[in-house]
Image (cartoon, rainbow over all chains, first blue to last red; front, side, top):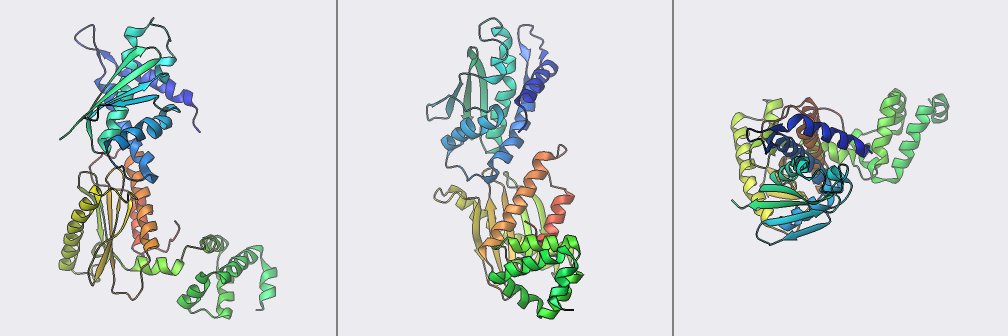
Length: 155
Length: 225
């Protein structure tokens, strides 16, 4: 078992290195970090699903991501999954690991979104490899609680 | 040389003898004997001539009681072609017996085989929509008088097709096809996920996979799972 702290430290460095201020001062450019997450998720899901059965449908896949996929990375499951059954899923994590290390008050709330980009990329990459084109956005609701919205594009 | 003296000789021989005794209980031994046409005397010499490492390996094969060495060998000798197709239906790995031994298969036959493999992808597409059986191993997909095609479809829609000739007079067991396909799948995942230089969607080039495929075609004597 690999120590969890390694991922935390690596992630902090990833954010420090890859997130650059964009031309618009108030916004940050997280595209690169998101892409790193995407290729990681793409490869990771391949390994995790190695011994599992094929998925029944979209919801089955989302459940797998909330349970197995999330546990492999964060050692906990997503706390709440909601869907409108039309391709939009809301994943709620009451204690998101990358945020819980920073603060549980609103002190650094404007700095927090960049700590979600990597995880958004992970979800997008995993869905990508399973055949779904998705848009994933993350937001900090009330630290350390986070919400990820997944919008699956039907093609 | 008498058997008791052999046993006294080296501990490794005792080890292998133990393996053989265990095998006597299973049906492996019978088929094993038939295959090598070994008399008991010949077998003694066989034990002595085996190196230490070989004996250990031999034992490990025998220990897997459900693992039929002979069946596996015969199965692998009759493999005609292997194709790995990725999730976008792009063929990332193709090998036929033609690539190894041009004398065993003509170029037209080779084309015909690849054509049949291509046609089998449609059957997989059909199976993909079915929800009853979601095991990655699909079993027998396509069959005619000269060949059988077995397939595997993973959760990430990677397809692996294995074509086996039916000319050899052996009843192929499903389990051999299953274990071979699983082995190939696992090796493919290692290549595509652990190799940092592999770009998803491109052709697979890997010595490890090549080695495994060679053994699948029965060209190297490695039956480890």
